[in-house]
Amino acid sequence: MKLIKSESGAVLPMAMIMLMVGAILVVPLLNTVSTGSLIAKKTSFADSEDYAGDAGIEDAIWELLYNNLGASIPNTFPDPNNHIHYVLGSPVNGETVDLRVEYLGTVIAADDFETHTWSGGSGWTGNWSVTSLTENTMNQSPIQGTHHVWIRAAGGSATRIVDLSGQPSNVRFQIWAKVKGFELGDNVELRFSPDGSQWSVAHIWTSADSDDIYYYHDIDLTPYTLSNQFRISFVADISNGGDKFYFDDLKIIGPPRYKIDSAVGGSITTVEVSIDGGQATILSWNQT
Image 1 (cartoon, helix red, strand yellow):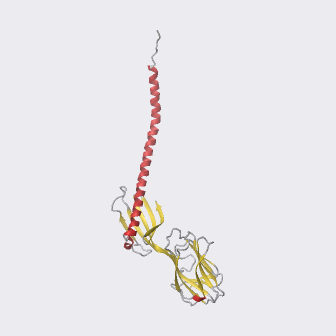
Image 2: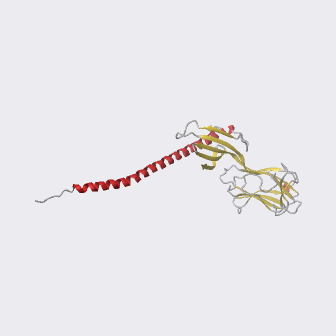
Image 3: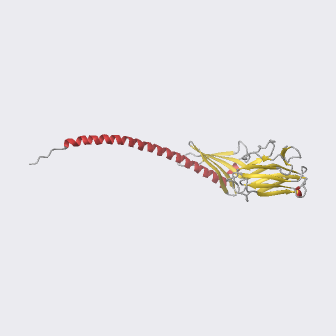
């Protein structure tokens, strides 16, 4: 007769060991799950604010395009009152969306030379680069103010860089210029370049323009590549110091531009947009 020994006494220690191991593993796992849930909640909350902010931007652009919101904003720049504030009628994702739309004007860059320096104006990437034969002067009756630019001999030039990347196609270059004393063969070229190496001649002043009277020029920049290093240059090929070319009150203008701030909780989405002919062009988009 075979005797079988009972093993019930070994099962209990084994069970106790398994419980202890389980306790060691489960606590960190629960902590991980809890931390992951908190991260998911925070991410979800942040996404909710971002989506609501984006919805506010889209609403403001729609109002500018189709509901004539721009007519409600004073169209002077700079002006402390050139903005409008409103709140979306209904919350988005349960969030209140607070909007501020500010008119930024139509001028992208300009210089009227009244600072009597080569760093004046606004909207430029850097200063004017000029030769010694180019002066900022008070002589010979500027078109406005007290100063204008005089290129007075062969080799005279003036160049400046502006960032036109992202601009819509409807961008224009506007300037006043006059010619005095040019003989046959004398000329000044207005040149544009996207990079400083490829140049296009946009306009030429010759002896046919030499009547010492200021004339206004409005040039469409649509045919040119609008880069972040767009160069404007005046280059003279004139015979003597008695030949004079002057320019003044230079502007680069585009369609009306607006800055839209969409605030939701602690998040703000800021967009700069241009509105032209029923089209909106996003110039910049940032979230903080």
